[in-house]
Amino acid sequence: MMSPRERVLAVYAHEEPDRVPIWCGMSDGFMAKARRHLGIDDEGLLVRFGDDFRRVWPRYRGPDRPLLPNANSCTVFGVYHGGIGWGQPLSHPLTGTMGRAALSTAPEYEHDASNGCTTPSRGRASGGIST
Picture (tube, one colour):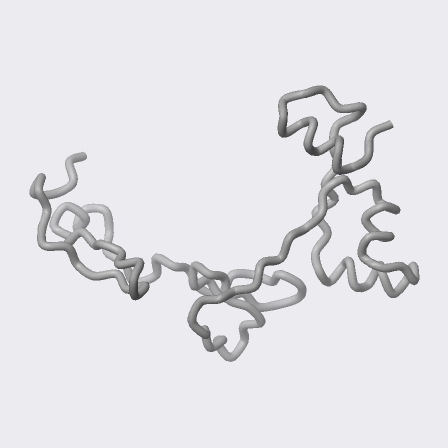
C-alpha cells in the first residue's frame, strides 16, 4: 500500500498508483468544526477522511488591502469575499472596464516588476486588436 505522498507523486510522474488520490477540498470553516467535534488535529482529520493531498499556505507579501465593510477576505487579484467560510464574491476585478468594442482603441499596459506598477506603454505597433 502506498503512502499519500507516494500516491500523489506517482500520479504526477504519470505512473499508476495503488488507487486514485483523493482530495477532500474542505473549507477552513468545515475543518475547524470537524477538528473540534472529533478532537483531532489537521493531519488526523485528513487521514480520517482519506485525503492524500496536503495544503501549502504561503504568506502574502504584497501591499495591504483594506477590506470593504462587509468583506472578510480579499484575493491577490483584488476580489473581495463576504459571508460564511470563503463567502461570495462582492466585487469583480474587471468592474468598470470598457466593453469589447472599445478594446481596439485602448492603450496597452506594461508591468514594471521593479516597483509593481502597471503603466500605459508607448503605443500599439499593430494599431489595435483585430477581431
